[in-house]
Length: 468
RNA sequence: GUCCCUAUCGUCUAGAGGCCUAGGACAAUACCCUUUCACGGUAUGAACCGGGGUUCGAAUCCCCGUGGGGACGCCA
Image (tube, rainbow, N blue to C red):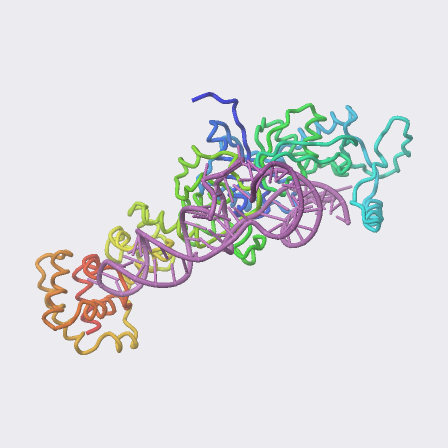
């Protein structure tokens, strides 16, 4: 393996809510890129907005990352713990003249913005406190704490080769001198990101599409600092199932909601990997395979709509191929949450093996297995349609055969059912369906001999006695 | 309003000028398998946003529209 220059990527959520689907995919791609190149993946918590950031949200993000198995190599770093560093850089910039104090009040700014909007112009700071050669600045108003603004270049263009979107060029004339430190001295987001990416040696910034417009500003600050400019890859957003922006009202946005809803993390990972990225016609692949294949060249530039049906399909696939012991554990905890003792029924591993081919999620699997544990007395309707006199007679015969069966195994139970059919002049479904109804309270189940076997003799006889 | 991004089946996508009468997958439909329901298998229908260029040739390149998204904060 060629020791490539060490790649360093980061995931930098702000802890104002849960780890949502879009964030999870961003994290996955940044993580995979670092893994692919034997680099480092850094987790950074952007909590400078103290009003909205909460420790619970930090924990929720950590939980989501852990559920997906996206482990970081460094961090988590917290921006609130790096304030001294930001202040230091701001002082340097002030001294170097790449930043300056601005005393414009919020009211003045509002008025300026209103004027510009009235003139149908793009609202922006007009540079009234920006020092220029030969320009005489007014004396600072007394008692006004200034903000610090970045002295953005006025000429030329900022350009970068976005790894997803291609070359993007923005004229400096479009950019204004943005605030890097508030009047109270705290640094702002666009500034912190730059210092952090610089200090942390980030080589590839893989982040959401919504940051494209911040990129030219960040590049300018990086240049003012004499820092190297990382590569940028902007991922387009993920839309909800309905084609609308993801919203907490309509969609499950927290990635851990999917855990609760019975999805396996590998299904989620596979789905997310394939949403906005492709490797030819490949649809199903492991995380390991994904890491080997992942590259920035095959990321889609346009927004993608989340499709629960496809996620369901992948989830069903991964459930089918999952280890029975693991599934039994998942089902046991889900049953326990419903107040059902998972030990009270047949061995869960055997039940899971019987049902896992037909479930699209773990909750459905638990639903299917529940009647093996808790007897569901058939409804009067089911009794009336299925437990006809002929069926009852056959089931009575069957009960005796089951009671006398030498061996409680499919190979003897299956023939016992078949022979009972013949003896009563009935077709297989005419006995099998009433038997399902009697045993499980429902007319559908996996192969009836297998169900009878897993249920065990005692339960089968007891349930037959209760119904007949 | 200004700037930026974006546009292939219902959905996710393949496609980087001829391999495309556009491929795969989910979903849909039909059939097969079957001891019911599923699973599985097979098959079918389904798309290059519109208009101009460039070229011998365009889904692929350029321009203009249109649609969608984003940004324009002492939010992140």
